[in-house]
Image 1 (tube, rainbow, N blue to C red):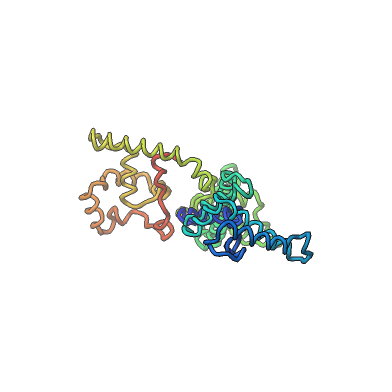
Image 2: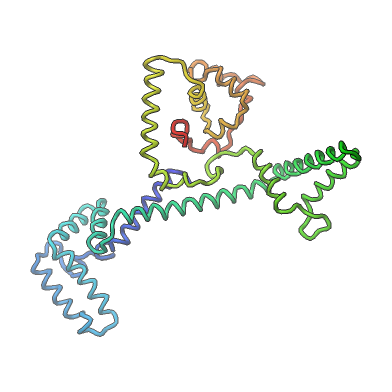
Length: 347
C-alpha cells in the first residue's frame, strides 16, 4: 500500500465517519422531501405540515409498527428547517455539495454533541492499526514465498553444511576427526533439512531452526515497498504526529545546504556526496546501504552529481565498467518510493 493510497483511504475513512456521525442531515432523502415541501416553503408552511404529520404518526396516537420511525424522520426534518440558522446551513449544503463536510461537522456538534477532534483522532488511530497489520501480513506473506524458493533453500542447506563442517573440524582438532566424519556430518545436515516430522531422521528443533532462518534471512538482500519490516513509524498516526518536527528539520537542512554549498561554495561533506550520488543513481536508502563499501568509494570519487561525469558514466558500456558492476534494481526496488526525509531527519 503506497503512501499516497494510504492518504486517500484515510480521507475516505474520515469522510465516512463524519457522515455516519452526522446522520447525513435527513438521511437519503432531503429534509424538504421528507415533509413534502418545496425549497421555497416559508416557516408557516413548514410548521403546518409538521404538525399535521406529527398528529398522524405520533406514537401515542398511532400504534402502527412503523409510526415511531416516521415520526422521528418528520421531527428531525422539522428541527433542521424550523431553525433559521440550521436551515441556512442546510440550504448552503444543497447548493454546494462539495462543501457538505462542513454541514456534517456541524451536525456532529448539534445532534450528537460529539467532539470533532475525538472523531478525527479515533478514525486516524483505527486506520493506523489497519494499516500496520495489513503491512505486517503482507511482509510475512512475502517472506514465506521467499523461503520456498530454490535459491533460499540451497543457501539454507549450505549454511547447515558449513556449520557441520566447522563442528567436525573442531572435533577433529580435539582428536579423532577425519574426512569421512566431515562427509558424514554434511550428509546428516542435508538429511535433517529434508526430514519429515515423523521420519527416521530428527529434524531441526524450533530454536535451531529459528537461528538458521535468521542467519539466512540476513543474507537475503531484498528492498522495496512492502519488503521492509513493519514499524509504528510507517503508520499515518505517527507520520501526522512527527510531521511538524520533520518539516522543521528539513527546512533547517535545506537552508544549511543552500548557505554552505551555494553561497559559501564549500566542498561537499562525505555524507552529502553519498546523498547526491544515491539520488543521481535513483537508489533508495536501503539499496545504497547494501552496496559494497569499496564500490561506494569508487562511486563517490567519480562525482556523478556533476552533469558531465554522469553522462560519461551512463555512456560507458564496456565489460567491467562501473555501470556494469552496479547492482541492477528489481521492479520492486525501482518502484519503491524514496523517503524524502530519510537522509535529512534520520527517521
